[in-house]
Amino acid sequence: MQLYQAQQQLAKLQMSLEKAHERHEAIVTTRSAAEAALSTERAAHDRRLDTLKSLQRTHGKHQSEVETQQSGLKQLEAASVQLASELTVTKNVTHKAYTHFPHMSHPILPTYQRLFSKGGD
Image 1 (cartoon, one colour):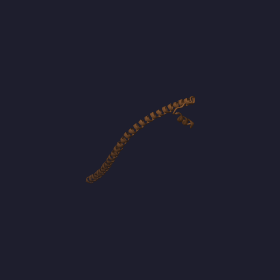
Image 2 (tube, helix red, strand yellow):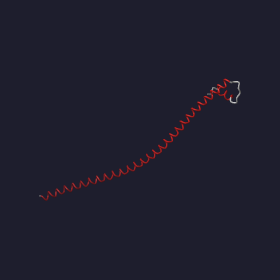
Image 3 (cartoon, helix red, strand yellow):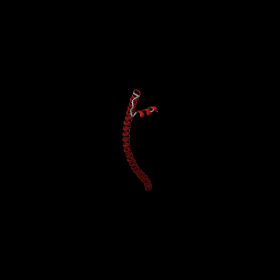
Image 4 (cartoon, one colour):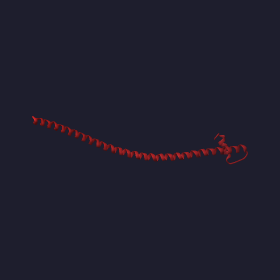
């Protein structure tokens, strides 16, 4: 009877061992698949990171160019305002001179008369 019980116990242990071995194989297979997926994702991540760094460098260059253009635009706007101011002063001085001395002849007077007769400011 003891031999029978021992054989039965041995059979149960063998079954448990086989199940444990099957679980281990399943875990190894799952781990292997997870490691392969991780490797693929790491490679994709590295490519995206390289692309991001490249885009950041390009963005930095473009940002610098925009800042340079903005600076130049501000300078042009300031020059435009200054020129407009100088032009207004020149027109006013010319207008005063023409109104105070209408009998004087000057080569620019026909141009001046044409500008002011049309209301050109």
